[in-house]
Image (cartoon, rainbow, N blue to C red; front, side, top):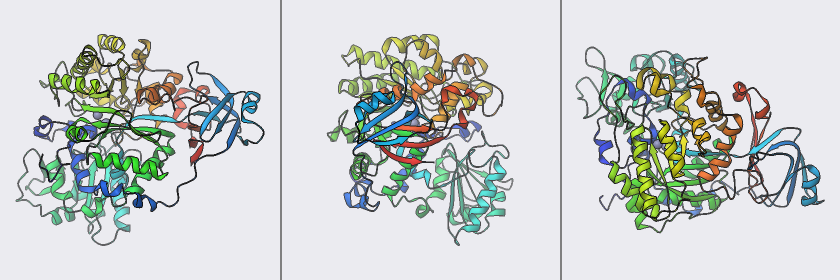
Length: 606
Ligand SMILES: [Zn+2]
Ligand SMILES: [Zn+2]
Protein backbone atom coordinates (compact mmCIF):
# COMPACT_ATOMS: atom_id res chain seq x y z
CA UNK A 1 0.00 0.00 0.00
CA UNK A 2 1.41 3.38 -0.91
CA UNK A 3 0.86 6.03 1.70
CA UNK A 4 -0.53 8.51 -0.76
CA UNK A 5 -3.35 6.19 -1.80
CA UNK A 6 -4.39 4.46 1.36
CA UNK A 7 -7.69 3.33 -0.05
CA UNK A 8 -6.60 1.68 -3.21
CA UNK A 9 -5.85 -1.72 -1.81
CA UNK A 10 -9.23 -2.20 -0.21
CA UNK A 11 -10.30 -4.76 -2.72
CA UNK A 12 -13.35 -6.75 -1.79
CA UNK A 13 -11.98 -10.12 -2.71
CA UNK A 14 -9.21 -9.65 -0.28
CA UNK A 15 -6.27 -11.08 -2.09
CA UNK A 16 -4.29 -11.17 -5.22
CA UNK A 17 -5.46 -14.64 -6.20
CA UNK A 18 -8.85 -13.30 -7.15
CA UNK A 19 -7.42 -10.42 -9.09
CA UNK A 20 -4.83 -12.39 -10.97
CA UNK A 21 -7.46 -14.74 -12.27
CA UNK A 22 -8.20 -13.58 -15.77
CA UNK A 23 -11.81 -12.73 -16.38
CA UNK A 24 -12.59 -15.34 -18.96
CA UNK A 25 -15.20 -14.35 -21.45
CA UNK A 26 -16.99 -17.68 -21.10
CA UNK A 27 -20.76 -17.91 -20.90
CA UNK A 28 -20.75 -18.47 -17.16
CA UNK A 29 -19.58 -14.91 -16.61
CA UNK A 30 -23.11 -13.84 -17.34
CA UNK A 31 -24.00 -15.25 -13.94
CA UNK A 32 -21.08 -13.76 -12.03
CA UNK A 33 -21.61 -12.29 -8.60
CA UNK A 34 -21.05 -8.57 -7.98
CA UNK A 35 -20.71 -9.29 -4.26
CA UNK A 36 -17.13 -10.33 -4.89
CA UNK A 37 -16.53 -8.61 -8.22
CA UNK A 38 -13.45 -6.39 -8.18
CA UNK A 39 -15.13 -4.23 -10.83
CA UNK A 40 -17.35 -2.75 -8.13
CA UNK A 41 -14.28 -1.62 -6.27
CA UNK A 42 -12.95 0.23 -9.28
CA UNK A 43 -16.38 1.63 -9.98
CA UNK A 44 -16.51 2.89 -6.42
CA UNK A 45 -13.08 4.46 -6.64
CA UNK A 46 -14.16 6.13 -9.85
CA UNK A 47 -17.58 7.38 -8.87
CA UNK A 48 -17.46 8.11 -5.14
CA UNK A 49 -16.17 11.50 -4.04
CA UNK A 50 -14.01 11.69 -0.93
CA UNK A 51 -16.37 10.34 1.68
CA UNK A 52 -14.41 11.91 4.50
CA UNK A 53 -15.65 15.26 3.12
CA UNK A 54 -19.15 13.93 2.58
CA UNK A 55 -19.40 12.99 6.22
CA UNK A 56 -19.08 16.64 7.31
CA UNK A 57 -22.14 17.80 9.12
CA UNK A 58 -22.87 20.74 6.81
CA UNK A 59 -23.35 18.40 3.86
CA UNK A 60 -26.34 16.76 5.47
CA UNK A 61 -28.08 20.10 5.96
CA UNK A 62 -28.76 20.02 2.25
CA UNK A 63 -31.39 17.41 2.94
CA UNK A 64 -33.36 19.99 4.90
CA UNK A 65 -34.76 19.78 8.39
CA UNK A 66 -35.06 16.14 9.44
CA UNK A 67 -38.52 14.93 10.37
CA UNK A 68 -39.15 15.01 14.11
CA UNK A 69 -38.74 11.78 16.04
CA UNK A 70 -41.92 10.17 17.31
CA UNK A 71 -43.09 11.63 20.60
CA UNK A 72 -46.10 11.02 22.80
CA UNK A 73 -48.16 7.84 22.79
CA UNK A 74 -49.85 6.23 19.79
CA UNK A 75 -52.32 3.37 19.96
CA UNK A 76 -52.98 1.29 16.88
CA UNK A 77 -55.94 -1.08 16.86
CA UNK A 78 -58.28 -3.12 14.67
CA UNK A 79 -55.33 -4.96 13.12
CA UNK A 80 -54.03 -8.48 12.75
CA UNK A 81 -50.68 -8.03 14.44
CA UNK A 82 -48.20 -10.82 13.83
CA UNK A 83 -45.68 -10.25 16.60
CA UNK A 84 -43.14 -12.90 15.49
CA UNK A 85 -42.37 -13.41 19.19
CA UNK A 86 -41.26 -16.77 20.59
CA UNK A 87 -44.83 -18.13 20.45
CA UNK A 88 -45.51 -16.49 17.08
CA UNK A 89 -48.54 -14.94 18.76
CA UNK A 90 -50.96 -12.50 17.20
CA UNK A 91 -52.60 -9.46 18.77
CA UNK A 92 -55.11 -6.83 17.71
CA UNK A 93 -53.68 -3.69 19.25
CA UNK A 94 -50.28 -2.12 19.80
CA UNK A 95 -49.13 1.07 21.51
CA UNK A 96 -45.85 2.90 21.33
CA UNK A 97 -44.37 5.86 23.14
CA UNK A 98 -41.42 7.95 21.97
CA UNK A 99 -40.61 5.41 19.28
CA UNK A 100 -40.71 2.27 21.39
CA UNK A 101 -43.46 -0.29 21.85
CA UNK A 102 -45.08 -0.12 25.29
CA UNK A 103 -47.85 -2.73 24.91
CA UNK A 104 -49.11 -5.40 22.51
CA UNK A 105 -52.31 -7.41 23.05
CA UNK A 106 -56.05 -6.96 23.07
CA UNK A 107 -57.45 -3.44 22.76
CA UNK A 108 -58.38 -3.43 26.47
CA UNK A 109 -54.92 -4.56 27.56
CA UNK A 110 -53.17 -2.02 25.38
CA UNK A 111 -55.52 0.82 26.33
CA UNK A 112 -54.78 0.21 29.98
CA UNK A 113 -51.09 0.84 29.34
CA UNK A 114 -51.42 3.59 26.76
CA UNK A 115 -53.74 5.78 28.81
CA UNK A 116 -56.46 8.19 27.76
CA UNK A 117 -54.35 10.70 25.89
CA UNK A 118 -52.92 8.36 23.26
CA UNK A 119 -53.38 9.20 19.59
CA UNK A 120 -55.59 6.49 18.12
CA UNK A 121 -55.06 4.90 14.71
CA UNK A 122 -57.66 2.54 13.25
CA UNK A 123 -55.73 0.01 11.14
CA UNK A 124 -58.96 -1.02 9.38
CA UNK A 125 -58.36 -4.73 9.66
CA UNK A 126 -54.98 -4.71 7.98
CA UNK A 127 -52.04 -6.90 8.92
CA UNK A 128 -49.01 -5.63 10.79
CA UNK A 129 -45.67 -7.39 10.90
CA UNK A 130 -42.33 -6.47 12.43
CA UNK A 131 -40.32 -4.38 9.98
CA UNK A 132 -38.31 -6.66 7.70
CA UNK A 133 -34.59 -7.03 8.18
CA UNK A 134 -32.43 -7.45 5.09
CA UNK A 135 -29.46 -9.35 6.47
CA UNK A 136 -27.06 -8.84 3.56
CA UNK A 137 -26.85 -6.00 1.06
CA UNK A 138 -24.23 -3.54 -0.18
CA UNK A 139 -24.93 0.08 0.66
CA UNK A 140 -22.57 2.10 -1.54
CA UNK A 141 -22.84 -0.17 -4.59
CA UNK A 142 -26.59 0.39 -4.40
CA UNK A 143 -26.07 4.13 -4.00
CA UNK A 144 -23.86 4.14 -7.09
CA UNK A 145 -25.92 1.82 -9.27
CA UNK A 146 -29.31 3.17 -8.18
CA UNK A 147 -28.96 6.26 -10.31
CA UNK A 148 -28.31 4.36 -13.54
CA UNK A 149 -31.22 3.36 -15.74
CA UNK A 150 -32.46 -0.12 -14.78
CA UNK A 151 -32.89 -2.31 -17.87
CA UNK A 152 -33.03 -5.55 -15.88
CA UNK A 153 -35.60 -8.31 -15.85
CA UNK A 154 -38.01 -6.47 -13.55
CA UNK A 155 -38.15 -3.51 -15.90
CA UNK A 156 -37.65 -4.98 -19.36
CA UNK A 157 -39.11 -8.34 -20.25
CA UNK A 158 -36.67 -9.16 -23.02
CA UNK A 159 -33.66 -7.90 -24.94
CA UNK A 160 -35.84 -5.97 -27.39
CA UNK A 161 -37.43 -4.08 -24.54
CA UNK A 162 -33.93 -3.15 -23.36
CA UNK A 163 -33.14 -1.67 -26.75
CA UNK A 164 -36.43 0.22 -26.80
CA UNK A 165 -35.73 1.63 -23.36
CA UNK A 166 -32.29 2.83 -24.49
CA UNK A 167 -34.00 4.44 -27.50
CA UNK A 168 -36.39 6.30 -25.19
CA UNK A 169 -33.52 7.54 -23.05
CA UNK A 170 -31.58 8.65 -26.14
CA UNK A 171 -34.64 10.56 -27.34
CA UNK A 172 -34.67 12.56 -24.12
CA UNK A 173 -30.88 13.00 -23.73
CA UNK A 174 -28.94 16.17 -24.42
CA UNK A 175 -26.35 16.05 -27.21
CA UNK A 176 -23.28 14.09 -26.15
CA UNK A 177 -24.87 13.08 -22.85
CA UNK A 178 -23.87 9.56 -21.78
CA UNK A 179 -26.63 7.02 -21.36
CA UNK A 180 -25.54 4.56 -18.69
CA UNK A 181 -27.75 1.61 -17.82
CA UNK A 182 -27.44 -1.44 -15.61
CA UNK A 183 -28.77 -4.89 -14.93
CA UNK A 184 -29.14 -6.44 -18.42
CA UNK A 185 -29.17 -10.18 -17.73
CA UNK A 186 -29.52 -12.59 -20.65
CA UNK A 187 -29.91 -15.46 -18.18
CA UNK A 188 -33.22 -13.91 -17.11
CA UNK A 189 -34.28 -11.88 -20.13
CA UNK A 190 -35.33 -13.62 -23.33
CA UNK A 191 -33.90 -12.70 -26.69
CA UNK A 192 -30.40 -11.82 -27.83
CA UNK A 193 -27.59 -13.06 -25.56
CA UNK A 194 -25.52 -9.96 -26.24
CA UNK A 195 -26.21 -6.36 -27.18
CA UNK A 196 -23.94 -5.05 -29.92
CA UNK A 197 -23.21 -1.57 -31.22
CA UNK A 198 -25.18 -2.49 -34.33
CA UNK A 199 -28.50 -2.67 -32.49
CA UNK A 200 -27.65 0.20 -30.17
CA UNK A 201 -26.64 2.50 -33.03
CA UNK A 202 -30.10 2.17 -34.54
CA UNK A 203 -31.81 3.62 -31.46
CA UNK A 204 -28.99 5.80 -30.14
CA UNK A 205 -26.83 7.03 -33.04
CA UNK A 206 -25.61 10.27 -31.47
CA UNK A 207 -25.27 9.71 -27.72
CA UNK A 208 -22.68 7.39 -26.20
CA UNK A 209 -24.33 4.37 -24.56
CA UNK A 210 -22.92 2.04 -21.91
CA UNK A 211 -24.88 -0.86 -20.40
CA UNK A 212 -23.66 -3.00 -17.51
CA UNK A 213 -24.51 -6.68 -17.52
CA UNK A 214 -26.09 -7.57 -14.16
CA UNK A 215 -22.92 -9.50 -13.26
CA UNK A 216 -20.77 -6.41 -13.84
CA UNK A 217 -18.33 -8.70 -15.61
CA UNK A 218 -19.55 -7.73 -19.08
CA UNK A 219 -20.78 -4.47 -20.62
CA UNK A 220 -22.14 -3.31 -23.96
CA UNK A 221 -21.67 -0.01 -25.76
CA UNK A 222 -22.48 1.69 -29.05
CA UNK A 223 -20.24 3.08 -31.81
CA UNK A 224 -20.25 6.57 -30.33
CA UNK A 225 -18.90 5.27 -27.02
CA UNK A 226 -16.19 3.22 -28.79
CA UNK A 227 -15.27 6.29 -30.85
CA UNK A 228 -14.92 8.48 -27.76
CA UNK A 229 -12.77 5.82 -26.10
CA UNK A 230 -10.64 5.51 -29.26
CA UNK A 231 -11.28 1.79 -29.61
CA UNK A 232 -11.10 0.41 -33.12
CA UNK A 233 -10.05 -2.65 -35.12
CA UNK A 234 -6.38 -1.99 -34.30
CA UNK A 235 -6.91 -1.84 -30.52
CA UNK A 236 -5.40 -4.96 -28.92
CA UNK A 237 -7.21 -6.82 -26.15
CA UNK A 238 -5.94 -5.91 -22.68
CA UNK A 239 -4.63 -8.82 -20.56
CA UNK A 240 -7.40 -11.01 -19.17
CA UNK A 241 -10.16 -9.28 -21.11
CA UNK A 242 -11.43 -9.05 -24.68
CA UNK A 243 -13.36 -6.79 -27.01
CA UNK A 244 -16.13 -8.64 -28.80
CA UNK A 245 -15.44 -8.29 -32.52
CA UNK A 246 -17.14 -8.53 -35.90
CA UNK A 247 -15.73 -10.93 -38.50
CA UNK A 248 -13.39 -8.20 -39.79
CA UNK A 249 -11.96 -7.55 -36.34
CA UNK A 250 -13.88 -4.33 -35.66
CA UNK A 251 -15.06 -4.17 -32.03
CA UNK A 252 -18.79 -4.97 -31.89
CA UNK A 253 -19.43 -3.08 -28.66
CA UNK A 254 -19.33 -6.06 -26.28
CA UNK A 255 -16.79 -5.50 -23.50
CA UNK A 256 -15.79 -8.79 -21.91
CA UNK A 257 -13.98 -8.34 -18.63
CA UNK A 258 -13.13 -5.46 -16.40
CA UNK A 259 -10.12 -4.15 -18.29
CA UNK A 260 -12.11 -3.53 -21.47
CA UNK A 261 -15.01 -2.02 -19.54
CA UNK A 262 -12.74 0.52 -17.91
CA UNK A 263 -11.23 1.67 -21.21
CA UNK A 264 -14.70 3.04 -21.95
CA UNK A 265 -15.83 3.90 -18.42
CA UNK A 266 -12.83 6.18 -18.00
CA UNK A 267 -14.47 8.56 -20.48
CA UNK A 268 -17.78 9.03 -18.73
CA UNK A 269 -16.76 9.89 -15.23
CA UNK A 270 -19.26 12.70 -15.02
CA UNK A 271 -22.11 10.34 -15.80
CA UNK A 272 -21.00 8.03 -13.01
CA UNK A 273 -19.84 10.48 -10.36
CA UNK A 274 -21.89 10.34 -7.21
CA UNK A 275 -21.86 14.02 -6.34
CA UNK A 276 -24.60 14.25 -3.78
CA UNK A 277 -23.73 11.58 -1.22
CA UNK A 278 -26.39 12.59 1.33
CA UNK A 279 -29.17 12.40 -1.26
CA UNK A 280 -27.87 9.06 -2.52
CA UNK A 281 -27.80 7.67 1.03
CA UNK A 282 -31.33 8.92 1.66
CA UNK A 283 -32.49 7.26 -1.56
CA UNK A 284 -31.01 3.88 -0.57
CA UNK A 285 -33.02 4.00 2.68
CA UNK A 286 -36.15 5.21 0.92
CA UNK A 287 -36.07 2.31 -1.49
CA UNK A 288 -35.53 -0.16 1.35
CA UNK A 289 -38.52 1.34 3.19
CA UNK A 290 -40.66 1.00 0.06
CA UNK A 291 -40.24 -2.79 0.16
CA UNK A 292 -40.82 -2.99 3.92
CA UNK A 293 -37.21 -3.02 5.12
CA UNK A 294 -36.57 -1.20 8.42
CA UNK A 295 -33.08 -2.55 9.18
CA UNK A 296 -30.40 -3.67 6.74
CA UNK A 297 -26.87 -4.99 6.95
CA UNK A 298 -24.07 -3.64 4.78
CA UNK A 299 -21.81 -6.62 4.27
CA UNK A 300 -18.49 -5.31 2.96
CA UNK A 301 -18.12 -1.98 4.67
CA UNK A 302 -15.05 0.05 3.95
CA UNK A 303 -14.36 -1.71 0.67
CA UNK A 304 -14.11 1.56 -1.21
CA UNK A 305 -12.80 4.18 1.19
CA UNK A 306 -12.22 2.46 4.48
CA UNK A 307 -13.10 4.61 7.46
CA UNK A 308 -14.61 7.28 5.20
CA UNK A 309 -17.59 5.00 4.62
CA UNK A 310 -18.05 4.39 8.32
CA UNK A 311 -17.91 8.14 8.94
CA UNK A 312 -20.66 8.66 6.36
CA UNK A 313 -22.84 6.02 8.02
CA UNK A 314 -22.59 7.73 11.38
CA UNK A 315 -22.96 11.25 9.99
CA UNK A 316 -26.06 10.07 8.14
CA UNK A 317 -27.48 8.58 11.34
CA UNK A 318 -26.70 11.75 13.28
CA UNK A 319 -28.40 13.91 10.61
CA UNK A 320 -31.80 12.45 11.52
CA UNK A 321 -32.47 11.57 7.88
CA UNK A 322 -31.64 7.87 8.09
CA UNK A 323 -34.88 5.92 7.80
CA UNK A 324 -33.48 2.38 7.73
CA UNK A 325 -31.36 1.13 10.62
CA UNK A 326 -27.94 0.08 9.41
CA UNK A 327 -25.75 -2.68 10.76
CA UNK A 328 -22.40 -3.16 9.09
CA UNK A 329 -19.60 -5.67 8.71
CA UNK A 330 -16.08 -4.43 8.06
CA UNK A 331 -14.38 -5.96 5.06
CA UNK A 332 -11.25 -7.98 5.87
CA UNK A 333 -9.37 -6.41 2.95
CA UNK A 334 -9.29 -3.13 4.86
CA UNK A 335 -7.79 -4.67 7.98
CA UNK A 336 -4.83 -2.32 8.16
CA UNK A 337 -7.21 0.63 8.22
CA UNK A 338 -9.35 -0.97 10.90
CA UNK A 339 -6.35 -1.91 12.99
CA UNK A 340 -5.15 1.68 12.79
CA UNK A 341 -8.51 2.95 14.01
CA UNK A 342 -10.31 2.31 17.29
CA UNK A 343 -13.35 0.70 15.69
CA UNK A 344 -14.73 -2.22 17.70
CA UNK A 345 -17.67 -4.59 17.72
CA UNK A 346 -20.86 -2.88 18.86
CA UNK A 347 -19.66 0.65 18.19
CA UNK A 348 -22.44 3.01 17.17
CA UNK A 349 -26.04 3.46 18.13
CA UNK A 350 -29.48 2.12 17.32
CA UNK A 351 -29.39 3.66 13.82
CA UNK A 352 -25.86 2.68 12.71
CA UNK A 353 -23.67 0.11 14.37
CA UNK A 354 -20.64 -2.10 13.67
CA UNK A 355 -21.56 -5.73 14.20
CA UNK A 356 -19.50 -7.93 11.92
CA UNK A 357 -16.16 -8.71 10.35
CA UNK A 358 -16.58 -9.92 6.75
CA UNK A 359 -14.27 -12.28 4.89
CA UNK A 360 -14.84 -13.31 1.27
CA UNK A 361 -13.46 -16.85 1.08
CA UNK A 362 -14.41 -17.92 -2.45
CA UNK A 363 -16.12 -16.69 -5.61
CA UNK A 364 -19.61 -17.31 -6.93
CA UNK A 365 -21.09 -20.58 -8.09
CA UNK A 366 -22.75 -18.82 -11.02
CA UNK A 367 -19.32 -17.71 -12.18
CA UNK A 368 -17.88 -21.20 -11.40
CA UNK A 369 -15.51 -19.57 -8.94
CA UNK A 370 -17.22 -20.92 -5.80
CA UNK A 371 -14.81 -23.43 -4.18
CA UNK A 372 -16.13 -27.00 -4.53
CA UNK A 373 -15.15 -30.42 -3.23
CA UNK A 374 -15.75 -31.91 -6.70
CA UNK A 375 -15.25 -30.27 -10.12
CA UNK A 376 -18.01 -28.34 -11.84
CA UNK A 377 -20.23 -30.27 -14.22
CA UNK A 378 -18.34 -31.27 -17.36
CA UNK A 379 -15.15 -29.56 -16.22
CA UNK A 380 -12.03 -30.18 -14.18
CA UNK A 381 -11.88 -27.01 -12.11
CA UNK A 382 -13.05 -26.78 -8.52
CA UNK A 383 -13.41 -23.00 -8.34
CA UNK A 384 -11.20 -20.56 -6.46
CA UNK A 385 -10.17 -20.09 -2.84
CA UNK A 386 -9.94 -16.32 -2.48
CA UNK A 387 -8.43 -17.03 0.90
CA UNK A 388 -6.58 -20.29 1.50
CA UNK A 389 -7.77 -22.56 4.28
CA UNK A 390 -4.99 -21.82 6.79
CA UNK A 391 -5.09 -18.08 6.19
CA UNK A 392 -8.87 -18.12 6.63
CA UNK A 393 -8.52 -19.91 9.96
CA UNK A 394 -5.95 -17.37 11.18
CA UNK A 395 -8.15 -14.44 10.16
CA UNK A 396 -11.25 -15.90 11.79
CA UNK A 397 -9.47 -16.80 15.05
CA UNK A 398 -7.84 -13.37 15.32
CA UNK A 399 -11.04 -11.40 14.84
CA UNK A 400 -13.22 -13.72 16.90
CA UNK A 401 -10.84 -13.31 19.82
CA UNK A 402 -11.24 -9.53 19.43
CA UNK A 403 -14.97 -10.03 19.92
CA UNK A 404 -16.12 -9.67 16.32
CA UNK A 405 -18.96 -11.63 14.83
CA UNK A 406 -17.08 -13.14 11.90
CA UNK A 407 -19.07 -13.42 8.71
CA UNK A 408 -17.65 -15.61 5.96
CA UNK A 409 -18.83 -15.50 2.36
CA UNK A 410 -18.70 -19.16 1.27
CA UNK A 411 -20.59 -20.45 -1.76
CA UNK A 412 -19.03 -23.81 -2.60
CA UNK A 413 -19.15 -26.87 -0.33
CA UNK A 414 -15.37 -26.86 0.09
CA UNK A 415 -15.42 -23.19 1.07
CA UNK A 416 -18.11 -24.02 3.65
CA UNK A 417 -15.93 -26.85 5.04
CA UNK A 418 -13.08 -24.38 5.38
CA UNK A 419 -15.29 -21.82 7.13
CA UNK A 420 -16.57 -24.42 9.60
CA UNK A 421 -13.01 -25.56 10.35
CA UNK A 422 -12.07 -21.94 11.00
CA UNK A 423 -15.02 -21.36 13.35
CA UNK A 424 -14.17 -24.55 15.21
CA UNK A 425 -10.58 -23.34 15.58
CA UNK A 426 -11.87 -20.02 16.97
CA UNK A 427 -13.85 -21.82 19.67
CA UNK A 428 -10.84 -23.97 20.46
CA UNK A 429 -8.82 -20.78 20.86
CA UNK A 430 -11.35 -19.48 23.37
CA UNK A 431 -13.77 -17.38 21.29
CA UNK A 432 -17.21 -16.76 22.78
CA UNK A 433 -19.97 -19.11 21.68
CA UNK A 434 -22.35 -16.16 21.25
CA UNK A 435 -20.55 -14.38 18.44
CA UNK A 436 -23.16 -15.80 16.04
CA UNK A 437 -20.71 -16.69 13.28
CA UNK A 438 -22.42 -16.43 9.91
CA UNK A 439 -21.88 -18.15 6.58
CA UNK A 440 -23.05 -15.93 3.74
CA UNK A 441 -24.81 -17.44 0.70
CA UNK A 442 -23.96 -20.89 2.10
CA UNK A 443 -25.17 -22.18 -1.21
CA UNK A 444 -24.35 -25.89 -1.20
CA UNK A 445 -24.91 -27.94 1.94
CA UNK A 446 -24.48 -31.70 2.47
CA UNK A 447 -26.29 -33.39 5.35
CA UNK A 448 -23.17 -33.78 7.42
CA UNK A 449 -22.38 -30.08 7.02
CA UNK A 450 -25.82 -29.18 8.32
CA UNK A 451 -25.14 -31.33 11.36
CA UNK A 452 -21.81 -29.55 11.91
CA UNK A 453 -23.43 -26.14 11.53
CA UNK A 454 -25.96 -27.12 14.19
CA UNK A 455 -23.27 -28.38 16.55
CA UNK A 456 -21.16 -25.26 16.15
CA UNK A 457 -24.10 -22.89 16.53
CA UNK A 458 -23.22 -21.21 13.22
CA UNK A 459 -25.94 -19.40 11.26
CA UNK A 460 -26.32 -19.47 7.47
CA UNK A 461 -27.84 -16.72 5.36
CA UNK A 462 -28.95 -17.97 1.97
CA UNK A 463 -28.92 -15.96 -1.24
CA UNK A 464 -32.24 -17.55 -2.06
CA UNK A 465 -32.39 -15.98 -5.50
CA UNK A 466 -29.85 -18.67 -6.39
CA UNK A 467 -32.76 -21.07 -6.36
CA UNK A 468 -35.38 -18.97 -8.13
CA UNK A 469 -33.33 -17.00 -10.66
CA UNK A 470 -30.41 -19.27 -11.35
CA UNK A 471 -31.80 -22.64 -10.25
CA UNK A 472 -32.29 -23.90 -13.78
CA UNK A 473 -28.77 -22.87 -14.79
CA UNK A 474 -27.36 -24.63 -11.71
CA UNK A 475 -29.27 -27.81 -12.49
CA UNK A 476 -28.64 -27.91 -16.24
CA UNK A 477 -25.22 -26.27 -16.71
CA UNK A 478 -23.27 -25.79 -13.50
CA UNK A 479 -23.87 -28.60 -10.97
CA UNK A 480 -26.18 -31.16 -12.57
CA UNK A 481 -29.50 -32.40 -11.18
CA UNK A 482 -28.15 -34.09 -8.04
CA UNK A 483 -25.92 -31.40 -6.59
CA UNK A 484 -28.38 -28.63 -7.44
CA UNK A 485 -30.75 -30.21 -4.89
CA UNK A 486 -28.30 -29.07 -2.22
CA UNK A 487 -28.95 -25.37 -2.93
CA UNK A 488 -30.40 -23.11 -0.24
CA UNK A 489 -31.40 -25.87 2.21
CA UNK A 490 -33.45 -23.72 4.54
CA UNK A 491 -35.97 -26.38 5.57
CA UNK A 492 -33.29 -28.92 6.53
CA UNK A 493 -31.44 -26.28 8.55
CA UNK A 494 -34.67 -25.36 10.35
CA UNK A 495 -35.34 -29.02 11.16
CA UNK A 496 -31.86 -29.25 12.70
CA UNK A 497 -32.58 -26.31 14.98
CA UNK A 498 -30.37 -23.89 13.06
CA UNK A 499 -31.36 -20.24 12.77
CA UNK A 500 -31.14 -19.24 9.12
CA UNK A 501 -32.06 -16.19 7.05
CA UNK A 502 -32.35 -15.27 3.38
CA UNK A 503 -30.94 -12.17 1.72
CA UNK A 504 -30.92 -10.26 -1.54
CA UNK A 505 -27.22 -9.33 -1.66
CA UNK A 506 -28.34 -6.34 -3.71
CA UNK A 507 -27.03 -5.45 -6.26
CA UNK A 508 -26.89 -9.21 -6.94
CA UNK A 509 -30.70 -9.47 -6.66
CA UNK A 510 -33.06 -6.66 -5.74
CA UNK A 511 -34.06 -6.00 -2.15
CA UNK A 512 -37.59 -7.17 -1.48
CA UNK A 513 -38.44 -9.29 1.57
CA UNK A 514 -41.74 -10.47 0.07
CA UNK A 515 -39.83 -11.80 -2.92
CA UNK A 516 -37.32 -13.51 -0.63
CA UNK A 517 -40.21 -15.09 1.28
CA UNK A 518 -41.75 -16.20 -2.01
CA UNK A 519 -38.45 -17.77 -3.10
CA UNK A 520 -38.01 -19.63 0.21
CA UNK A 521 -41.63 -20.79 0.46
CA UNK A 522 -42.15 -21.79 -3.17
CA UNK A 523 -38.68 -22.45 -4.66
CA UNK A 524 -40.09 -22.03 -8.16
CA UNK A 525 -37.81 -21.60 -11.15
CA UNK A 526 -38.08 -18.28 -12.98
CA UNK A 527 -36.86 -19.79 -16.22
CA UNK A 528 -39.04 -22.87 -16.04
CA UNK A 529 -42.56 -21.95 -14.97
CA UNK A 530 -44.27 -24.72 -12.99
CA UNK A 531 -41.03 -26.35 -11.82
CA UNK A 532 -39.84 -26.41 -8.23
CA UNK A 533 -36.24 -27.03 -7.21
CA UNK A 534 -36.18 -29.63 -4.42
CA UNK A 535 -39.67 -29.20 -2.92
CA UNK A 536 -38.48 -30.80 0.35
CA UNK A 537 -36.55 -27.60 1.09
CA UNK A 538 -39.61 -25.35 0.88
CA UNK A 539 -40.35 -23.66 4.19
CA UNK A 540 -43.61 -22.52 5.75
CA UNK A 541 -44.77 -18.93 5.53
CA UNK A 542 -44.33 -18.65 9.27
CA UNK A 543 -40.72 -19.81 9.15
CA UNK A 544 -39.93 -17.46 6.28
CA UNK A 545 -41.39 -14.51 8.21
CA UNK A 546 -39.36 -15.46 11.29
CA UNK A 547 -36.23 -15.65 9.12
CA UNK A 548 -36.66 -12.08 7.90
CA UNK A 549 -37.65 -10.59 11.25
CA UNK A 550 -36.73 -12.28 14.53
CA UNK A 551 -33.86 -14.42 13.28
CA UNK A 552 -32.38 -11.73 11.02
CA UNK A 553 -32.39 -9.41 14.04
CA UNK A 554 -30.56 -12.08 16.01
CA UNK A 555 -28.05 -12.57 13.18
CA UNK A 556 -27.16 -8.89 13.24
CA UNK A 557 -26.98 -8.70 17.04
CA UNK A 558 -30.05 -6.49 17.22
CA UNK A 559 -32.63 -8.85 18.66
CA UNK A 560 -32.77 -6.80 21.86
CA UNK A 561 -34.26 -3.86 19.95
CA UNK A 562 -35.92 -5.02 16.70
CA UNK A 563 -37.22 -8.15 14.95
CA UNK A 564 -40.40 -8.75 16.95
CA UNK A 565 -43.31 -6.60 18.09
CA UNK A 566 -42.89 -6.75 21.85
CA UNK A 567 -42.89 -4.14 24.60
CA UNK A 568 -39.50 -2.47 24.89
CA UNK A 569 -38.51 -2.84 21.25
CA UNK A 570 -38.58 -0.11 18.63
CA UNK A 571 -41.87 0.52 16.88
CA UNK A 572 -40.52 -0.71 13.54
CA UNK A 573 -43.29 -2.36 11.56
CA UNK A 574 -44.93 -2.79 8.17
CA UNK A 575 -48.59 -2.67 7.24
CA UNK A 576 -49.73 -5.21 4.64
CA UNK A 577 -53.02 -5.24 2.74
CA UNK A 578 -53.61 -8.93 3.57
CA UNK A 579 -52.57 -11.48 6.16
CA UNK A 580 -49.75 -13.55 4.63
CA UNK A 581 -50.75 -16.51 6.81
CA UNK A 582 -54.22 -16.64 5.31
CA UNK A 583 -53.37 -16.48 1.60
CA UNK A 584 -52.33 -19.25 -0.79
CA UNK A 585 -48.50 -19.29 -0.62
CA UNK A 586 -48.44 -19.06 -4.39
CA UNK A 587 -49.92 -15.56 -4.12
CA UNK A 588 -47.24 -14.04 -1.91
CA UNK A 589 -46.17 -11.67 -4.61
CA UNK A 590 -49.66 -10.17 -4.66
CA UNK A 591 -49.20 -8.87 -1.10
CA UNK A 592 -48.71 -5.14 -0.85
CA UNK A 593 -46.59 -3.13 1.53
CA UNK A 594 -48.94 -0.27 2.38
CA UNK A 595 -46.86 1.47 5.03
CA UNK A 596 -43.47 1.20 6.70
CA UNK A 597 -42.77 2.64 10.16
CA UNK A 598 -39.43 3.08 11.88
CA UNK A 599 -39.20 4.17 15.51
CA UNK A 600 -42.90 5.02 15.56
CA UNK A 601 -42.61 7.27 12.52
CA UNK A 602 -44.19 6.53 9.15
CA UNK A 603 -41.35 6.50 6.62
CA UNK A 604 -43.20 5.06 3.64
CA UNK A 605 -46.79 5.00 2.41
CA UNK A 606 -47.83 3.33 -0.84
ZN1 LIG B 1 -20.73 -12.53 -1.00
ZN1 LIG C 1 -22.60 -9.65 -0.70
